[in-house]
Length: 261
Image (cartoon, rainbow, N blue to C red; front, side, top):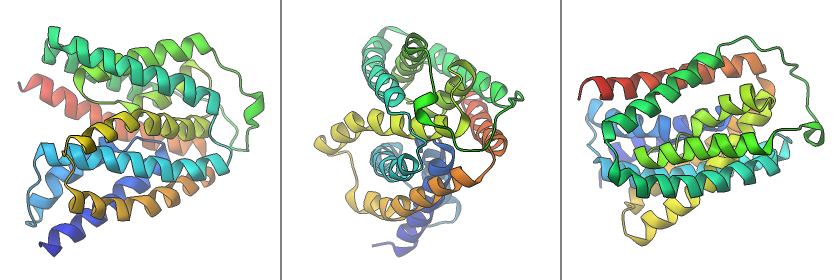
């Protein structure tokens, strides 16, 4: 047993889940590069993409649920929005995964990279918003718009094999007019709903390295709760800027893959 690798995975779980819980990310956007590149960089081991995929989907499921409890307690989760967009995204992702057999992976990745770049750009657009608490009952949104957005992101995400949970938040903020902190909390709910089928699928097909996954999860669950608590304390504008930076890095990574193939 390599204790150096286990300690590294624990720390990765803490860092990834803290940022994900605070910014309402599914977690894969941060965990995948950390799990792939940090262990070999510091010389404690190498994880295959298959191992990383199995670890990530379980960690996203566990940390999203952990952070979701805090966001819900802070009244930052719009349940009707989570159900509409979460269920729609799951169905659309399945259809996209089936349809992807007929499409070019490079084209799909290019489309997704464009969506991520667009999301990063709109997140830096100034938006007046109060940082005081918002009554969930007063928030109105277009159900048709929510379905269209989740269908688009879910379908393309299913084709590419990336959930794209981080794109939901800017779309909610700028197109559905959802307050930033509620959008962050609700996105974590969508990430949880979307991860259920993937987590079950990976488990029943034996694609989850149990010890490695458990190590990351042990660090991720409490860290996600702590990160979620910070969401309520940090100004909405600062949260949007931080999210823009994370999405921009994801977009750059995808464009790099597109242009270097």
